[in-house]
Image 1 (cartoon, rainbow, N blue to C red):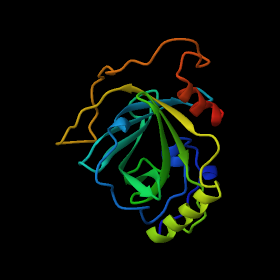
Image 2 (cartoon, helix red, strand yellow):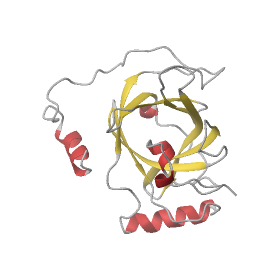
Image 3 (cartoon, helix red, strand yellow):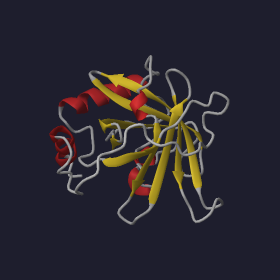
Length: 212
């Protein structure tokens, strides 16, 4: 059984590493991936620490996810690798992530789940799932708890983490986890005021609701 790790016990704050870890996936992979999740994504925390996630195709139904904590040099940079896929539970979609290579703290073979909200082509909000199941809970029992918490609106943390796409990616079939050169975004984000007044109403509301 994988030892239970939860957010308060970790120094890492990214959603990919801040949930509790489980022995079993939420579901198996869906038929297809959501291509809007592909790219290099960045988030800067309250202390100015940069976090970076690179999401590339692994197969037609799985992602290769690399989470990076950049250091002052290559030796200090930490990297975690995951296989990821979309899990459908009821009418909702989540990301199931399996750790396949760890820089520490995250057990290899552990699963973590996160909810994703695609705001637009360059903004995604991730929220952890608040699950109380044992680490060795079956996939069936995990889905059962998810459905229960969906009904009483207690599944997701109130505030999510906003990630911004900064680069496109391509499918490297020989090594999906390999670093890739910077590639300009096909669709550039609009420029304007910092308060989001230039954003469409739907986008402003998505961010405002969660206090972001």
